[in-house]
Image (cartoon, rainbow, N blue to C red; front, side, top):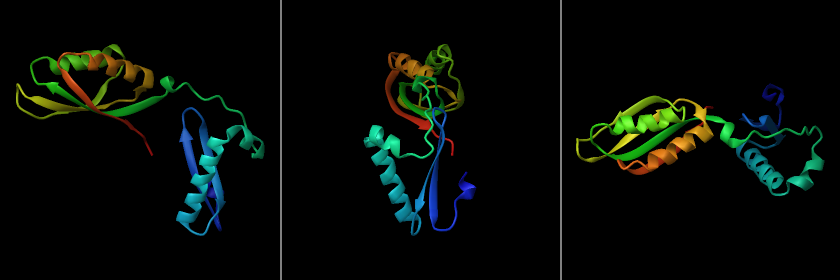
Length: 153
């Protein structure tokens, strides 16, 4: 619990669907030195996981969830040929994969190449990736410019 961290100790909390809550703490002389030390420790753990494993006092084995089963919202920017039915084609591809939109913004003139910006509702990673592959194959799509996972903090 972060509330129990005090005095000269600093900590960071990592939360994830696949691994739960992880707290890293240590002595520090201010935010930057402690933050740097903690990040350094995390990198060391990741690089030498099997050796480092035995150094944890309270290590519990946790199964990490398959990434395709995690849920996220996405910010998407897709360049398309602006003509009637384009939005319906794209929305249909996402609907087949069970991905819905929280918002859609399109600016431009008919007949031009325009950007459509989508913010999706939370959906399974695997479903979103499947929808994006299908959308990329549509003849109205010039390019999928941005796919940015939205992380809630």
